[in-house]
Image (cartoon, rainbow, N blue to C red; front, side):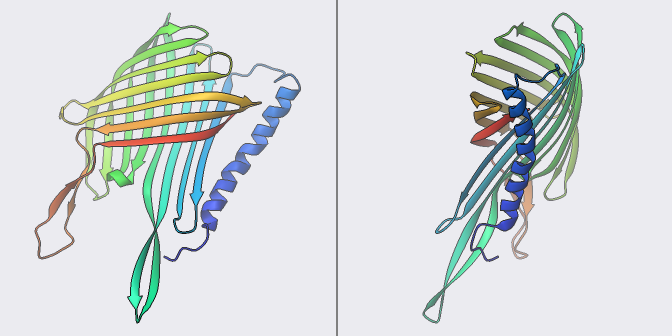
Length: 285
């Protein structure tokens, strides 16, 4: 595929996302200028966007988008989160054709991850609660086409005040995976989760969470997902966020490679760890 200028389709996606955020952001800013919302609301929504594009001798595009919607009941909380990350790069191949150079350009996906999660937490007594969770995940560069998870368990808040919230969860669930080569697998997981939220003054905060999932039938199938972020308030409803994701899979996806009919099939195992560092602009509705 020939590549010249910035792809109009990618630009349209970014403009559409920004266009979707601006009206809500303008409404929020107007409310803030008028002394804030007139009535207390039991829901909140937070959207973040990060974008990088280069052109010329190198052509790369990186887009990250996340949204977190929370609805608070009297003794419960419902949270829906969506996160996506996609990175592409142009690769040029030079060929000598009759003394002239022909440049063949192809855009390849170098990074791609999508995740959606729905979670419900219901207080039992004091700081003790039970939860139910469902999620969908895709990471094609790691050989994973889809991963569905449904689970439940119990948790407690070890600290819960105006500045610090520290909570832990323990439970289990059912996971179903489909690899890029079409192989499917279903197994039962044990899940442990910990989260820490800390306010730093009136305009900044730290949020860290980590979860471990262990296949009860195959102990080598251990997955650990961790996320850390620092958010600093800029103005109005706008904030800047620095975030870091680490995803570890002790038994990564492996696929059979059989491109040469004269050679026996070979097994390729993907890397165990994916790391992502990013900066995003956040709009708090």
